[in-house]
Amino acid sequence: MSYDPALSNTATCKSRISYIDGGRGILRYRGYPIEQLAEQSTFLETAYLIVKGELPTRSHFVMWKHNITTHTLVHENAKRFIQGFRYDAHPMGILIGTLGALSTFYPDARRIQDLESRRMQTRRLIGKVPTIAAFAYRHSRGLPYVYPDNELSYTGDFLSMLFKMTELQYQPDPVLERALDVLFILHADREQNCSATTMRVVGSAHADPYAAVAAAAAALSGPRHGAANEDVIHMLREIGSPERVRDFVAEVKQGRRLSGFGHPVFTHGDPRVPTIRRVAYEVFEVTPRNPLVDVARELERVALDDPDFVSHGLYPNIDFYSGIIYEAMGIPVAMFPVLLAIPRTAGWMAQWAELVLDDEQKITRPKQIYLGYDAREYVPLDHRREGGALETEVRGPL
Image (tube, rainbow, N blue to C red):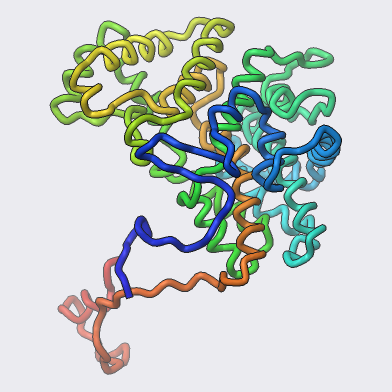
């Protein structure tokens, strides 16, 4: 057997969903360049492509949009479930817990081999995750929950559920609505990253998709996975002002950590950055002035003019821009991974369906290299030494 601790050089599946060539700066969904989708498509159309495998015709898209919109409401018991969380519960924890609970509302989800059941759960999840996410946000703010408005677009409805106050009907700013749509497209799938792999691992046990999506969201909640844009905001707050940027850059050159620059996969340029950078500056034009945006702009300017940064490929990445876009829109940092989970649900469901239909896939069961004791004789409790070496060994690393 081979030893590959992070599976970074091991293919665990065959997939037709997304393709990345980091060295050449390529990201494609079902063969379509991400740049074209971000510029010309909508998130719901892209979600159809990811889930179904082809771009929809007009009639198919109308039906798809209707099917998703029909499932934006959550059961009132699910709403009360969310209300049961502490007032200071993290929105990502609320999302994970509620996603897991949804399987108790839809027992038909266990019929994973049934095509119509898989389709239904996919529609439900893509429709309901934004509602649950918005309820989690409102819960953390002590605000009444806002029900979906099916007259609005997918992202417009989400903005309404986040920010609507006393107005009869919320009218989202079209720039923010489109910005969120583009962000959702850019984040919908990323090959076999940690959360997609988690979706497949849990799915390989034939768990229902709600349990698998909850597990994928849990993986996304980890600081190594879904918190990169959150780190950017913390960094900008630490810098504090545009005047401090050059001192901060000097500290980076001495070994200080830098967030939002470079990319572990896209080593020669992230194809998503040109689009998201343009969107970011459009958002800045229609949102209230935010001091962190000024810091971000100055950091971007200094970094792009610095030969050391340029020679090492340390360009601002998508997390740099998505973080300051969310910040400018007034979305709190705790919601950042939740916003990533919304579009990723389409990718997760596509990964799950591909796994279920793949005859080569069995329940995930990797090998291990055992480093523990050889066979030992059991020592009765009364004969074990207090405070000796044996007691320390028995306790183990925990």
